[in-house]
Image 1: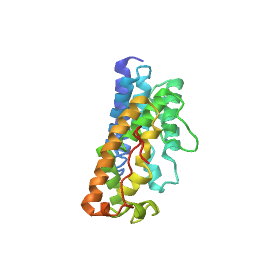
Image 2: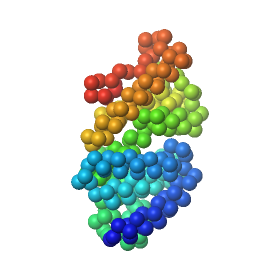
Image 3: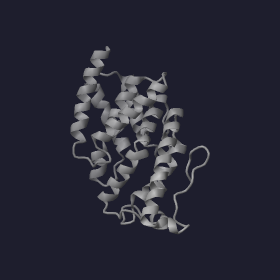
Length: 235
C-alpha cells in the first residue's frame, strides 16, 4: 500500500472515529484520541524500529469502544470490544490480516488489564501514549473533568480521598492522583515514555502541593502530596 493510499484510508477511518466519539465525555472524546495520537508519534520518533503505520492506526482506534463502556457503566471493557471492532473496520478498508491483527492486539493491550501485556514495540508505544495523556497539565484537567461528572468535591484531604469509594462525593481529582496517576511513571514501558512521564508527574506533584496550600490542607502533616523517589516514581 502506498503512502498516499494509507493516508486516504487513515483519514476516512479518523472521520468514523470522530463521529463515534462525538458525544463521549471530555475525558475520552476525540480530542483525547488526537492527543494520544500525537503522543504516540512523538514516542515513535524516538523509537525508529517501530512500524509507524501500526502505531498511528492503533492510537487512532484505541478508544473506539468507549461509548459502549460508558453506556453500561463499565461492564463492557472498551479494550476488549475495541480489539474486536477494529478487525472488520480495517478489513473493509482493505488492510491485510497481519496489519489488522497487529493493530487489534495493540488496542486490546492499551488498557493493561487481566495480565494482558503489550507484546510489541508498537503496542508499548500506544500504551505509553495513552497514559501520558493522564499526566501533566492535561492529566489534571481530565481528573477535574471526571470529578465534576460524578459531582465530587473540588478538593479533600488525603485520608478522605484514599479511603473513599469511586464515584462518590470524595472521588476528587486529588483521589485520582493519589490512587492512580502518581503511580503511572513507574509503569511506563518505553524509555522516552518514562522520561516524559517523570517530567509531567513532577508538574502534578507541584500543582497538588499548591492546591493543598491554598485550601489549608498543608497545615496537617497527615495531608500531603508524597515526594518522589530519585527515579521519579511517586509513593
